[in-house]
Length: 164
Image (cartoon, rainbow, N blue to C red):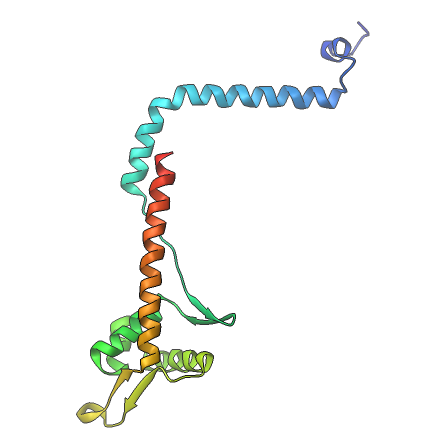
């Protein structure tokens, strides 16, 4: 054997040195993975139980209209609060928005859709108020159903993944 040459290089002259190193690393990696799998089989079920009991999947959904942001879950809550409370100010308080933010969000939705979201009447505390338009009712209903279905499918997918 020539001086300074590793034994593997002399014995495996048909392989390039890089290929031999790569094959050795792949074999070592596979060996480590197999060893970890053998030792952690009992732990896997305990870990899976812990994950199932402690992790909760979450997601955020929103709607775009022709690529422009239209509404998110908080917008949905705001519109539902307008319907319940009967005023923009009370709905804003319910979702934690200032009156100005409420008006800005409404203007943005109306600008994007090209339709009114609320039918309002002036009159202040004595006779004013706001209610959803027919289009807004339809949008709220569709968003609510879609969000509920996304949540159902997210929970289902998460349960499948944690079982693995």
